Length: 373
Image (cartoon, rainbow, N blue to C red; front, side, top):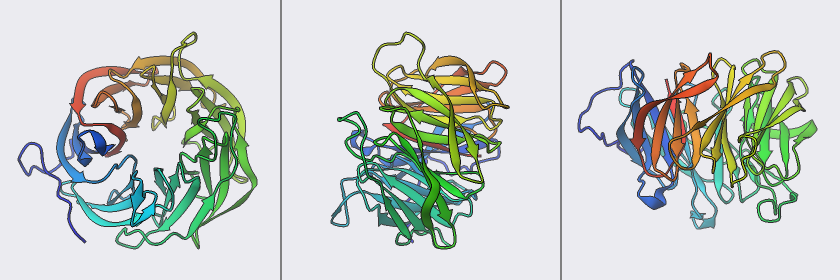
């Protein structure tokens, strides 16, 4: 195992303390970024301080295991190992410093890998290749190393938008809270594909209800489950909406309940929706807009799962591709890709909105944030 050092920006070897929380930042490296940035979030003030960086090629999406000991990154490159397509890299997280030690890197088996997630046992890593149109399951060794895929599922079909939906474009893969079913929002198909997860062999198996429909031309992108396990939400990139589904965990079935806009009524300028998260309480759903440059904040009806009133908070930057909620539900950090900033907001649970802290960190082309409490 070779080490990728985290170069501390303050020139010291101060350990991360209980008062501080680690933040890992995935970036695009074509515009001055060096790779995966490591920050320390001051939980008293919301200030994010850069403490290091691990060299990586276009680590545009990250995933961290439940034990907070392993980090995985897609490498959104055009070729790896002499084959057209991207790759996935594995790192060990050093508990005392937060620095990353490189473990290994494997071919992603498709073009433009864009999302990663882990099953709840930490034995499998899931990846989707946006341009490759497929879903890949990687078994993991005890040290976190990636093994050869145990399954590769190719999607087929297209949608009504000839420019963006010329073929399948899976954009995320999310397992339900019971670790029994896997869900793949496919932007190109206007479907959320549903699989049973065969944990014994790392396989994605056909589900009796193999997909949930989305509005034609909507472009499903990312997905999140409510903590109660009976509601799920999908953000649709192309028509700037969020769809609320009722969820049957026994059947792995999604039933559409409601669709709401992510931008204010009457907004006519260009916009594409991006990321979606719930606060840990499940009381507020958050969705990001690239174009309107905002976070839409919805109150959630805990009985029905429906989204109620909406507030729209400007992200104080351009193109908020990704954002993250800290585990204590104190702060939201927003990655403004095109203004090269990460901005911290305080969560106002009572008001159902976000409040600026006036704390901004500058990092080149940030697109994905993972907070480790």
